[in-house]
Length: 192
Image 1 (cartoon, rainbow, N blue to C red):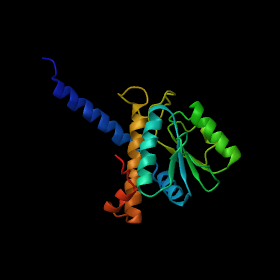
Image 2: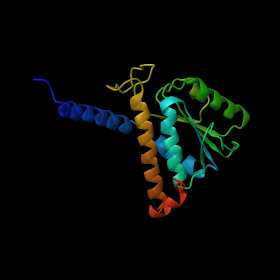
Image 3: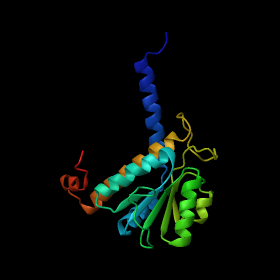
Image 4: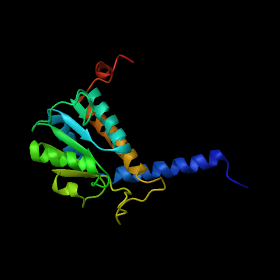
């Protein structure tokens, strides 16, 4: 007898949550703490990525803005000037996506602000540009030997992990700074 949709859904849900758990457990807490400190000490925080990574980063950017961080996404119409006291966070699983790599190179050459790469491939060109890497060692198009494999298509696990890592980091910032959850609504859009 064939499995019901409910049974197939339950199995898929368990598989996805298991992968996410393994991916997030594999992130180095020392690198994540350094990222948290750099976010809190930066004048402004800029994010860059492409595709679904961009969407995950935009969510993280928005969440940090809700915490009072001056956060921006590279390419937004109101993007301000990047300065030396700012932080650029580059999201790219492979570390070789053309646009994020180009933006990181330009930021290094013209501003020399702090640059952090959140990705999976520690041997990419970003290694020579970024100050350090927060590695989420999941399946990318490189299929490196030490990557966590995924039953999901392409780089879905990286994009999901990136979004959840941003939310985990936001929770930790809220706790560290003892932010009042109700007071955070003052940063939320009110024209909706």
